[in-house]
Image (cartoon, rainbow, N blue to C red; front, side, top):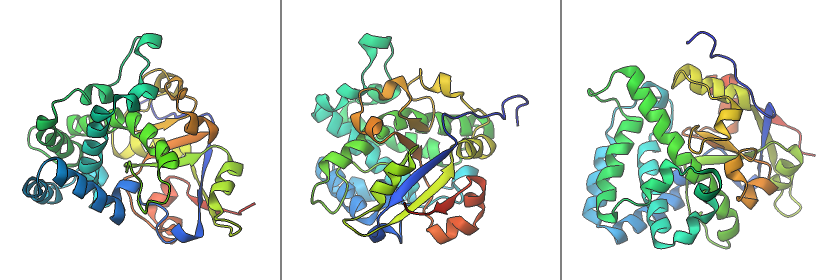
Amino acid sequence: MIEGMAHVWSYKKDIYRGVAQKYKDSPFTASAMRYNEIVHLEQYFSHMYSKSTLLDLKTKLNSLPAIPFFQDASPLCPWSWFLSSIHIILEAKRNPSLLEPLQYLQIYGVSSVFESMVTVDSELLPELMFRTTRETFSKTEEYDVLIQDALSYTTVSAMVYGYEYFQHINYDLRGDLNYNPFPTMVMDWTEDIIIANRFSYSGEEAGLVLSLDYDKYKQLLYDEWYPLIVHAGIASTTPGFTPYFDYHSIFAAKNTNIQEQKGVVLFWPWDYTIAELLENELGRKIGFKQVPVL
């Protein structure tokens, strides 16, 4: 650990997630790692490119040796990250208006790495995202451990800035679909337990409300992924600087859903049940607990 950098700070320590009863058996699977969403993303990729390209890249990505931070994560991470990233980028290229709520260049004079990715030629995108995914999740002989972790952390951070918006428009666009139209590798939380409680209900049926310690989540990233913690004041003025994002950021101002939900978006590569998180090491490290439904 780097001396003097172990301190973390958040706007509110505990954050909450409401889970309806129908999702109680898999409440902590990011949408891009769910079965229906993977089917949707694979079909999309095959249509845009080819089935043979899909199968070739899937075989390569599923055989990657994980860097230490991802060794206890879901083995679906690299493939889900690859598919969901390409899907979002291509859809943003096809419909540029999707990016408008993410663009602050005229206001603050900055644009994000995520926005730059959207300018990549579509034909070059599979190979670029394959290399990017490999560098994010896998050990390579090209870099030492610290550089590998830094590259992994910053790549995820760059994409989470865009993911947070697309994750939230799923709320508006899902309708009667049995999958999220924009699957991502992030997960929604809220600072407001009342909002989490509301999301836990399906009709009159009460669900579950779960919580974790936001600062402990950040500490986990610092301890086990990359030895850098970004003060909230810095993160809020730099798009794509952290693999987490909340409604306090000036770059969340135009995302009405995250504002209304007092939202916190976390990169979430794990796939555990509630019972497992209540007992395992990850749950302990992030202060995970179940709280009473109001």
